[in-house]
Length: 194
Image (tube, rainbow, N blue to C red; front, side, top):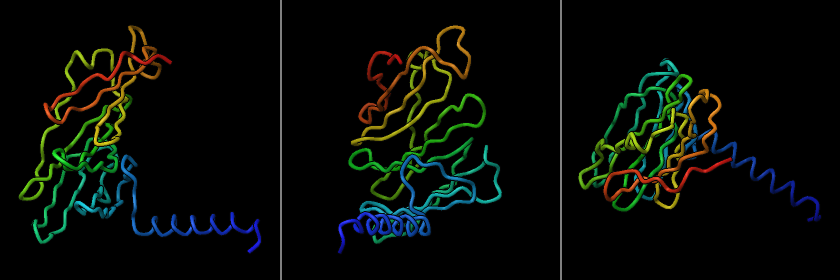
């Protein structure tokens, strides 16, 4: 094989994997789910599907999460209220095992909300992840983002100073990590300045 053909072969192989994944509905955690899309997610822990039913408005409706029956658990279906755009869930393991779905509201604030489907000994149940305290949210006006890393759930907000417009925050950024053990948010650091 000629030396200059290897990059072409690697590109074609990667493109074929991309096309295959697009056809079977593979999605990365944190990716936006459009109305009418359904994704089947397989994992070593629990398989599930997540969808936004066709015909619903993009701004409000439902998110459907389904878990197939296994040898240990019955099939379960959750129709979760959706106020905005839902993003593919993060799956957690260990004591916090479950799925966390993040939704951004429609409108200029793009406020985030979380829904937690907790894995239990008997199946899956809807559980609460409380919002940060008012003191922790001081200076924020939505536009939060969510991501997960090493079992941690992290949220990030722009911080607004008095007089800032909704589209132009000038107070840096606030990051918080969810503490699974005591069900609360912790500010990670002082405000991050640009």
